[in-house]
Length: 106
Length: 239
Image (tube, rainbow over all chains, first blue to last red):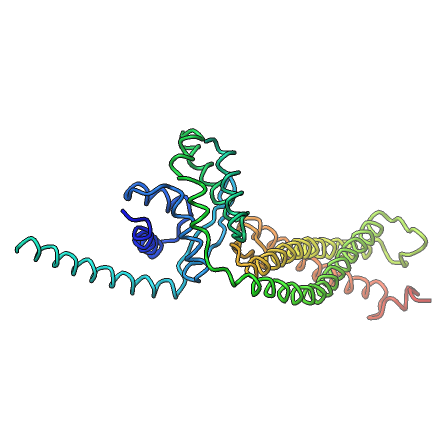
């Protein structure tokens, strides 16, 4: 799949993960690479982009034993952006689905 | 490619691409290596799964006009904090002096109590009085010493907590200004567990009660002995 195309989708997936709970970078990377065929490193540039756009913030959490983990959290704008992107995606998929089905029927 | 090669290539590519906050990016990958290797993967496997570091570095390139704003932010936050530091330092010094005074009261009360009870009269500091009055006054002084000592310890602990809390706040302000991750804030109140807290509270209350009772009894007893409400005149304390 085209990398730029994939990046947009991964962004949406990260949003949906963070919408439910705060997570640290490695956790997100592991979760996504289990389900989607991407290289593990791809998640970090996207997280950074989201942060510089103000859609997520980070905070450190001191775990017992080991260095502090950097958690990502959706901001208010981030949550709004997710709900909007989510609806757009669902509508888009519906349309594509219908188009493909129509093509099959002909 | 092992970990060092991966990190080096990534770092060089990021520098070449002119990406800012490289350290923060690198630490994220560093963490990834640590977690993944803890799961039993070799350095080679981890870096293979991470992807080509040169390709990854390219993905970090974004339009970066924010850099100047960020520096400005840091400067003003730093300046503001410097002024705040001076102000806070004054408060901290006064607080510390207060705690020292309480400690001094505790030490001198304890000394007075011990001198009274052991009939030691160094430099004729202890005025004349019957021994039973002296014992009661001594009990009052010792109770006061305990009270003040616990207060001083509380004071010191709270003082320390305040400093830690302010230091964390200071650090987080700078981190926020440079858009870095922040630590959770530290509490400004004392963190004592329930049992110790109860013990301290009971001790404080008990020593307060003993202090008041001993002082009143000592006064009544002395007044009786001297047959005067102002027994200190009869015993010629201030002459």
